[in-house]
Image (cartoon, rainbow, N blue to C red; front, side, top):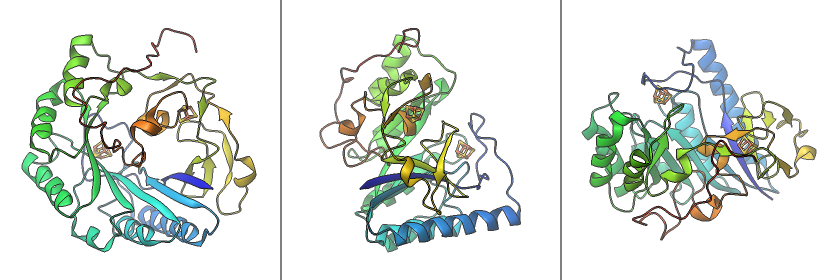
Length: 300
Ligand code: SF4
Ligand code: SF4
């Protein structure tokens, strides 16, 4: 079967300090880093051993993974592993990029976020150009805060045309129609992100073909539903795999709602669901797609 794993180990440190960071960052001690490395190695070895499934992996660390050698190595190794369809990571792209030359370019991908104020613009842009020149699959995004709009416009203008620039609605931030129109002009798919999606009772692929895995191997259906389904390493997760409706009222994070069966996002991002790269023909649409709208005030 096709199995998608969202891996989030204990790593929580980051080389940036974004004021809007959604995570409780910390400085990882040497022991914590050692534990994170061991957990990642165990996960990587498990993926290598799988024979019956085609596995795709998205690393979604609390902090920044690619400044750690073990995440870079995991990306390279898993990209070359038979049976791995895609391996991607969310990153601020502060790391060097030449190590990606060892990875299988058909399999490896990056989900990059530009954080204005944390890195010089030209440095970030230069890295995206290096990735594009090396033929690495990646998307780039910006958090849709008012002060980021000009940065996002500039980045859209400077990025290679074929690179998708996504905009994430800022947490706890609502957008007037005029503001949303500004962001949609940068990212035609912004309407999917603008408001949280009503998800309670709706069919979601998580728990059946998509799973969240932590450093101990504890499996949840997604990062947002706390009830565990079992453990990866003792195989107990396996018998829990089945379609089940979402138990939460709202799903407001792309790495969650992209898996909702009631949204068309597996078609929109066909071939690039994990790294958030739209299917050819969709990313250059100049106006908003007609979207199913789920106003927060409505029922499920
Ligand atoms: S780069 Fe990401 S993890 Fe790091 S501080 Fe910024 S938002 Fe938080
Ligand atoms: S809709 Fe979101 S919160 Fe609900 S199960 Fe799916 S990923 Fe989890």
